[in-house]
Image (cartoon, rainbow, N blue to C red):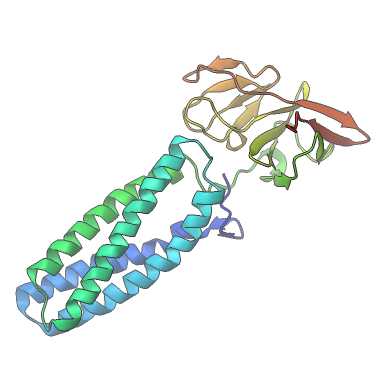
Length: 264
């Protein structure tokens, strides 16, 4: 799914995380040199890198939090992975804040600092592994493109019994559009058989179907390949076992209207 924190469709979080990674690892390297050689110049460089790493981590955390809240599909395995990724990074930040505070009264690096920094870099490695999985397996931040140069489309609407969700000419063949209606995420798609509407939630691990592929009336989840019939919602291929919910669409005066059952 396309990142909500981006510049010209390029997600900001993956760009910014390179800085705290480099600075925190650099902190460990220069403090280790200071510890083994006794050279205070190395310790001073380590302190500067320590400060830069904290600043970089805080900066990178902003678009990361935005993506966690607004881009990662809710009630999914990626949401759990994203939460663990964020918690680990907060721990890393806390460790290096502690190191910075601890080193203020020292002229030289000691073993406590090195052990803390080793732990921080180890946690940073695990968090980075999870972040890579979020991008390369769960495709968080990926900007979808369709044949004919069709681009990712997403809209937010108030909950009503009937909602105008698209123009008939808006979607290309096999193109999808993600529509948010209160706590519902619904995909609008165009197939050879006409327009379809279904839940944006794979029943296997909660992947975003809007970020998958729509071909011949079948939508495929981008995470593990489960396939669903867009008209009936039935499972055509696993690992998913449960059907997805489908919704009624009405075409009227050149527009598509989504029919919902609104409580109350």
